[in-house]
Amino acid sequence: MLAIVIPTIVATLAFAWWFRASNKRAVYRPHWVYSGRIELLVWSIPALVIFFLGGVIWIGSHDLDPARPIAAKSVTPLEVQVVSLDWKWLFIYPAQEIASVNHLVLPAGMPVHFSLTSASVMNVFFVPRLGSMIYTMSGMVTQLNLQSDRPAELYGESAQFSGDGFSDMHFTLQAVPADSFAHWVESVRRSAGPELDRASYTELARQSRPARPFTYSKVTDGLFMHVVTHELAPGPGPQEGRGGPGVTARTEQ
Image (tube, rainbow, N blue to C red; front, side, top):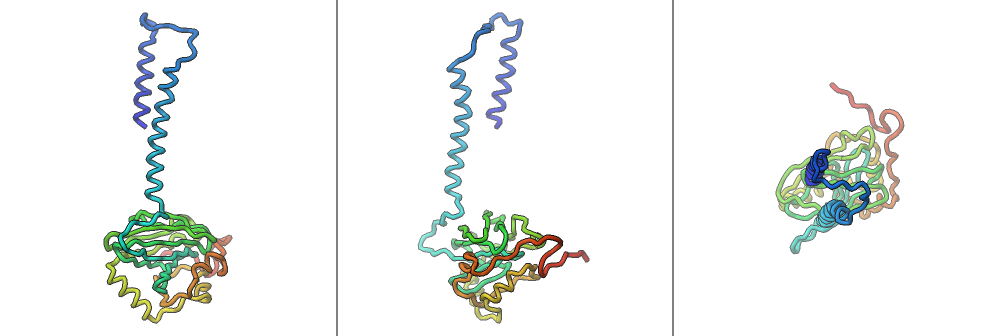
């Protein structure tokens, strides 16, 4: 903005000085109303600014489009389905047929394609250090492509207020080497964890604040689309008054 503000201030002072009453060289034109040159100058500066900023935004919005696949040579992106619930995050790995709650494990160096929806009110999926922020909406699927280039443990959260449990609606994203990811998948499959089917999903969808992350050793095929199409009823969202079903006010010890 200084490129506009500074010349304007300088021009204002210059005009005031040049057209002062004591300057006999200044031409007095009481009937002057229009100058094509001045009009061209006045409108060309903001037009150039708009063209420049518009070009930057146009190029950047296409380069950084969340739905744009990440270019990778002969590497198939990992598919992860994300469901925002009250007040927790469900991550489904359809190819691996497992799921986790509030714990997202990804292979470092591999593109990841997220399909996101909400089983309740609109929410926002956000991993600040990974450069992502995208809405999840009931009855819709949004697309997101991310990649963690190196192993890391990152903080993820909900970026939109969604009721009493919003402050606890966060998760951990672990980017691990490919062999560690394969080992984690196998350990989840062999664990004694429950199966994520219609009944267990309905229980999970109740408003609650889970104490710690946990996993499902098996997922019913097509469960994510059942959530999207409302074959599995969406949650009630924030309730009137203090708290909702299965929620109590947090007290400090």
